[in-house]
Amino acid sequence: MKQANISRRRFVSTTAAASATIIAAPFVRTAHAAGKLSVGLWDHWVPSANAASKALIEEWAAKEKVDVQIDYITSQGEKLLMTAAMESQSKSGPLIKQNGAVNDTVKYLGYADGHWLAVPSTPGSNIKGPCSRIDLMKQHAGIDGQALYPAGQPPKAENWTLDTFLKAAEACHKAGFPFGIGLGTTTDSVDTIGAIFQSFGATLVDANEKITVKSDAVREALDYYTRLARFFPPDAPAWDDATNNKWLVAGKGALIMNPPSAWAVAKRDAPLVAEQLWTHGMPSGPKGRYAPFASYFWGIWSFGKNKSAAKSLLVHLSQPPAIEKFVAASAGFDLPPFANMTTLKTWAEEGPPKGTLYHYPNPYNHQILSIAAAPSPPKIAQQIYAQGLMTKMTVRHLQGEPMEKTLAWAETQIEGFMRS
Image (cartoon, rainbow, N blue to C red; front, side, top):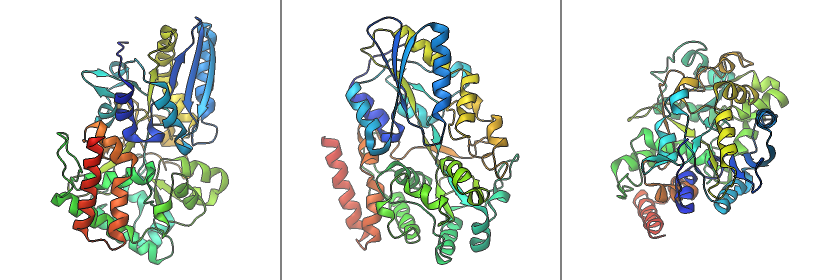
């Protein structure tokens, strides 16, 4: 694989656009002595999913006679982000020719100046689309998620729009089962609002670094999201990435925006809730149907001494059989970023209810996979993302601040980002 040096600033700017839980993983740090390798991996949300990476690495290590040390790094408290910032970045290249093309979000985060900065990985990568309660959505909103997204069939979601979504949120809120969507500054909250802004064609800064906060598209998106947020839980601004999972598993809400980790925990701890969960596509907006895609990456430290072993390991972990094992071990959570790997049997067979994850990997490409703050240049996008600027705008407007004052505040914030 072709390697390329990049600076720490470029790495943090590029991958931290996805914030702490989307920073490149694993970080492969090579030891000074030949035959030794230190690997840092994201500590998975899904119970027992780490077992697959451990087994695959140990299988490779035994074959290659390499002594490997594995550390699992939590994404809670931004420890993963801090580890990345302290360690510097990798040299690597993806296996696109073998596994198929990657989506534009993966390329936006991992490709710059004519080369790849890191290898797109399967573990951790995910789509944060709706996971809804079949029974509650039918009863209170008149929406049949299984009919919109039938297992084994293409979506029938022409009428699954943002207007329908807003009406459903209001109905479920009145019934005492609000949509569990946060307004905090962690990734789940930021990814959700980012996708909905993009479905209006709303960007705060364009690809040429022009501030576009005061555009009609941003006004429309902010107005919509503020109206929607009136039907969120009252403490939504304080939510983190675990709150929505706990909310759904406890039976308190009709829908969250999340990969299948909440469903996996419910299957273990609240099986009656799990059998009513259906993962499906996003509602469409004026400019299309956008889904939040969280992309993880694998890299090799530039200061490592055993790069050949590290590269060999990444090739091993990127083979189709290894990818299939990652997906199976994570109960379908882990989502390969490669086009040829989105129809694995795990998503068709997992349950209960059987087929609940069939549409999770976007097998019919009916959604545009995106990340909040794109297409802003990474050095600006990572600050918009990490600061939760769009959710903060919503909270301010929701609390009664006039829209133009909120937009002016956001513009000032971005001007500060550009100076930093």
